[in-house]
Picture 1 (cartoon, helix red, strand yellow):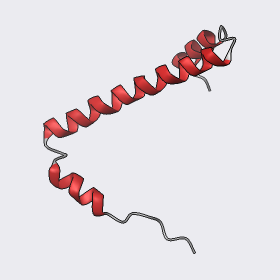
Picture 2 (cartoon, rainbow, N blue to C red):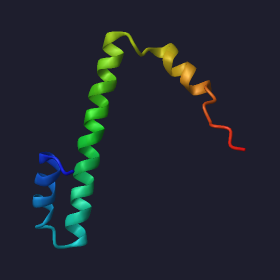
Picture 3 (tube, rainbow, N blue to C red):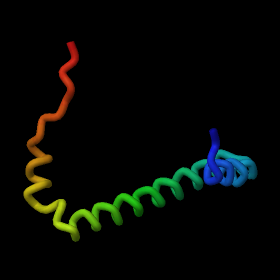
Length: 68
């Protein structure tokens, strides 16, 4: 089922007519989501849930799934 946001995006995209338009939209969406991730990470850092130790732990973590 399509929600209201998805419907609005589909309507907006109906006016895209070229690869350049598509590329511009992709760049916009990447920037939009990157900004949201930055804000969420800042909130985690400010709350103390993430810190330098968390980053060090993640850099050495081995979380691959062993496939047989």
